[in-house]
Every structure is written in C-alpha cells, then in structure tokens.
Amino acid sequence: MRSMIDILELSTKEIDELIDVANDIIANPADYAEKCKGKKLATLFYEPSTRTRLSFEAAMYELGGNVLGFSEANTSSASKGETVADTAKIISGYADIMAMRHPKEGAPYVASQNAYVPIINAGDGGHHHPTQTLTDLFTIKREKGRLHDLTIGFCGDLKFGRTVHSLITAMARYENIRFILIAPDELKLPGYIRYGVLENNGIAYRETTSLEEVMPELDILYMTRVQQERFSNIEDYLALRDTYILGVDKLATAKEDLCILHPLPRVNEIAVAVDADKRACYFRQALNGKYIRMALILKLLAEKDTPTAKPEGAVSFEGAACINPRCISSTERDLPHLFKEVDKGIFRCIYCDTKLNI
Ligand code: NCD
Image 1 (cartoon, rainbow, N blue to C red):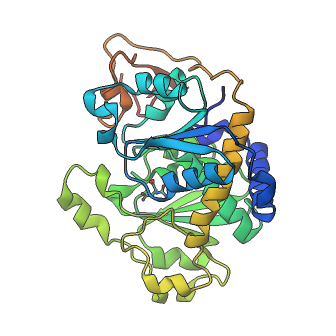
Image 2: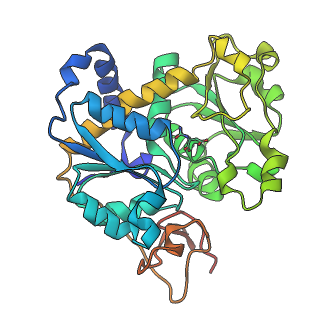
C-alpha cells in the first residue's frame, strides 16, 4: 500500500496528473461527489492545524466519504504513552486512509511502516509537509501557468519551515528554477536541503538577508512565519519574529505578475493591506489545498495495494543514535536507529535526515 511521506515519492508526471485531477474537480465537482462513498479518512493530529486538517476533512466529505480522528495529542492514547507504531496499526482497522501531523520528525514515516492502510504526512516537526507542497505546486501552476523557468524567493524561517523544505525539494526537479533564500543567519536552510537537494544537484541558488534587494527579480515570493514552536527559548524567537514584514511599500519594485504565496497562518510577516493586491495569492492557495488533497486521496486509495517501500540500504552502527531531539527515534520505544548513506561516508538518519557524526 502506498503512502505519501516525502514529496519525492511522486514523480513529476504523477504531480502533473494530480494537478489535472484537481482542476477537473474544480470544473466538475458533481462527478466526484460519490467517489469515496463508504470510505473513511482518519485525521491524527498531534499538533495544531486549521487549514491542513480541515481541508483534508472537507476533501473527504466532498468525495462522499467520512472522517474520524483527533486534533490534539492529549485527547489520544499518545498521552498514555502509546507509540506511533501501535496507533498506526490500530487505526488501520478503523479507517481506509490516514493523515498524520506530528511534532516528531519521521513520525508519519514510522506510521507508514506499521499501518495496513496509506498514511499521508500532514507535517512532521520542522522536516517535511508534502501536501502543502502539492498545494503550492498546484497554485503556482494555476497562477503562473508553468512550474519551470521561475525565480522563487523563500523568505523568513528557512530553518524550521517544513513547507520550505518540501517545496524546494519538489521545485528543484523542474527546468531553469532559481532559488533566492532570504533569511537571517539564525534561520538558514538546514544541511539536508542545502547539500542534499541544492548543492549535490548543481541547482542555482543565492542567499541574502535583504528582501528589498532581490524583490525586482522574483516571479514567486514565498513568505513564511517564524516557527515559534520549534524554538527552545522565547527570547530567540522574539528577536527574529519581525525580521521580515511585507508591506505594500516593499512591493513597489516587484514584478507586475509576482505571485505572493504563504502556507499560512500568518502572524505579522504580511501586512493585511497587501491582501488587496492582485499579486496576493495566499487565500486562493489555501482553497486549492482542498482540491489537490481530494486528488491525492483518490490516487492513494486507488493504489492502496501497492506494497509499502521498506528502507533500502538502511544501516545501523553499534551505539550510534540520531542526535536530533526532535527525531521520532528519540521517543519511540524499540525503534532501531537506522541511517542511509547519502554521499560517500556521509550518513543521515532515515527518519529525520540529520547527519550522523562518526
Ligand atoms: C504550515 C505548517 O503547518 O507547516 N501551515 C500549514 O500547514 N498550512 C506553516 C506554518 O505553520 O507556519
């Protein structure tokens, strides 16, 4: 059975097909109204969410299916100490497909290795968020008409922003994409994206701390919230929170057809006055999330008999454990510490991609 943990599990052809289906759903909603009749989606949300959870639920209802689940870890047996692996096995008996959001990086992956139904990663810690990426790709295609030949500026929290990590990973596969990374030193992109995706594949990128300086070059500006919940102390967060605030004034030098995206929620990084600008696409982006999730649910249910891929080439080293405190291997009992060799002599944790120092 097929799960959706990392955006790279989908080929660019499959992404095109999902976009086509989502467009068809928008054009002909009645054709899809009973496609999931008798099917159930479980939403397992161990972390707050508005758009992701409710768009998944709306997506399943609009396909004629039903929804069950929880929206807080403390209302589930996680609060009694149940492992993700056990929860995934149990819910497999109650639902046909599950969407999981978890603060621990790699938790949905562990669920997918243990469940008997497809698992969708709805955000794991500061790691990945593939369905937001599908939403972003769908929005870029609808707004710009293409997924190639684009200069994309990512602005804000590029360290903890999981939507950024997944979108860079996905966009790096298209022709002639240039990334401009706009972030303070403290919030720069993590190594597994910088080296694993950009440098290793020779992809053009530039780093700056100034949004104003690069504004005229951008086709897409992807604003992000500084991820307060990933900071270990509030002072560090407060010192960085207001680094970038996009106001109407800053758009004066921007292209006429700039597309401004934000996964939302926004705190204060985009002034409300910008909402009236035709270049503000983020509310349309949030709506698109429902349609592309409908397309994804249909695809995964149709492919549910495909066997789950086992971790290929995973190795363990005596006494070696992942050092990332946000990794699922730091809390999940009986989970082996496994690593994959990503480059000669460079090993990364299979759950969270943190580099192993040996
Ligand atoms: C994002 C997330 O949860 O990573 N939100 C979302 O799913 N639309 C971004 C964020 O919380 O800042």
